[in-house]
Image 1 (cartoon, rainbow, N blue to C red):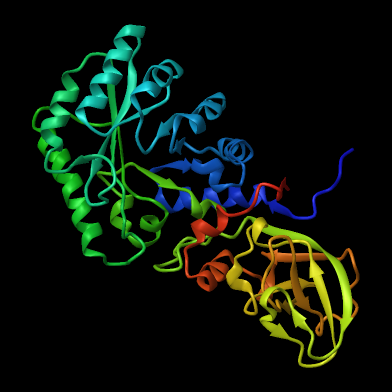
Image 2: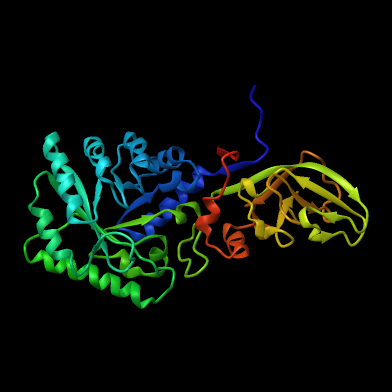
Length: 371
């Protein structure tokens, strides 16, 4: 028996494609790698990637091998952007996934696997220009790159790095990182070593650092901007729109007397007799607990304040503004249109986090519907 879900996330694939086109136009002639890690930030890797492949994306970036393999069927380059473990290397070389070289030992292992399989493995050199997480330190990179280039079975196609502060316009570190990157390119170029693909810009850099979107760079990487969201800091130069609408339904409507305590801890008491709705979505579905007594939902396109503390499965809201609401009516928890729309960034600010966490937090019982 097919029972409809009580909470669902509508994902607008046409708006996704339009967002991609706007990003591609903004960075042209640079090409665009779409970041699909964490199941496309929880939105569904294959539906999102298929739509972007149809729109003309130039490749995909992921965090680990498990995410890479399904994407290969789309006929676009698939690159692991983080690191690769020794036991993962042979299968990734066989599959044709583009692998990161984060150190010389990893390069040697990839080379050995390629030689054993009589294949050429495509690799990108990962530089640590200031992220402090993974990659070859910029100061060490020229010597390491020269060693890597001597290894058999490798196509050193690309070189890349990552920004920790690109959401801050004018960040000195971000500019210094690009200086370090370019210095490495200049150093190895003296030995005739060049890279066909060169990329640093993420979504934040696309909006805040035009320098990262011009030569010597010829690719950018973007994830959250494809979804129409931005970091809460920094500029928003791209005119992209949200592709997300999180919906549920009214489960119950009750007339409760003045003084009634609402929810765990009775953090809200009714100041008067009120109509109160219970909706079938809670923090297990991705609603931040910080919405308690602070946020709102849309019923009949009208904001209705959340009262009391969110539960795992339910949320209570005041119905003063929509007296005609009925059990079963649709509720917009996130999204909507016009001045009352609830943005991912709104939730992020209430939770004192960033939009990435919000998008990645939708629970596994939330149905993804592609429209």
